[in-house]
Image 1: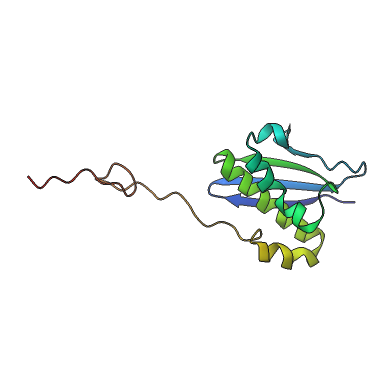
Image 2 (image 1 turned 180 degrees about the vertical axis):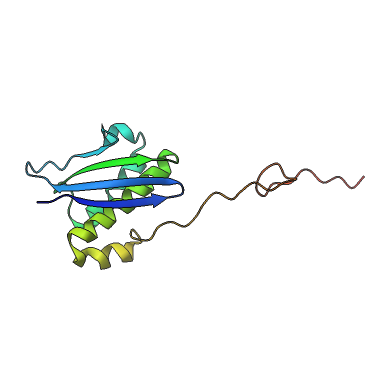
Length: 131
């Protein structure tokens, strides 16, 4: 079986996902050469990453290697989820409808708003004084 490569993105994080069918049936996921549970400290992030595999019933069927960079761990988890969903569609195009309906194929467009001049943050203003 050949390797399936897909890219996932969220905020400024990017994740390159490489999937190969697992021969041993374990289906290991490594991110930046660390096991999934070691790389993502929170259970919610691990749950988020595993969702496309659970939804399609493919958990444990693939060995997945991920190279994630940029952003924070939450954005990286979203990028990994996006990449896994895209790779699953490359592997089996029939899964597209299931993953699309769940919203895993859409890149999350939300980005950090830039800071504006004359303000302490993007939207926050200095305290107004009438006198």
